[in-house]
Length: 184
Image (tube, rainbow, N blue to C red; front, side):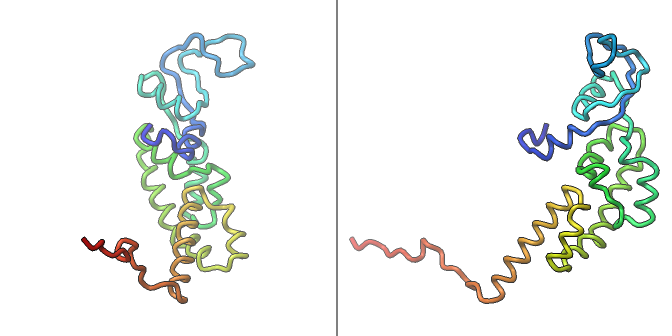
């Protein structure tokens, strides 16, 4: 709840995560087509991350890694991380991974996130940033939300730098310095 009003954080926590119930739960409708309003002990279901996290804190469920962090994705990232379409798997890949890391038993997820980000930043974002605008628009749909935000920040920074370099004002005089003292 650190970023309560952040829309990206809200959307990240809406991603589904598989859980295993340790305790039965009555009066819960997870599947609308189910005949009963209860979940049995040992049931495996997918819940939004925010709910899975709360139930995990109450020791009612164990959280497992979603499909976007499966072995196939890991092998693809090891082979060539810059070519993997992470956005189609999970738009908030890095943020969700960081939130899942302390809650799951798999301790290699931190290394996966770090490796993927380093390689993708070096390869893909550099490629997108140095390409022309027409070529960059081809790569943008494959970037995760975090990578797209980074790209836009870099693009705005480069635009401001080019504007300054081509003759924008080198120094700006502070408005307070332009005022003269009143004579008494």
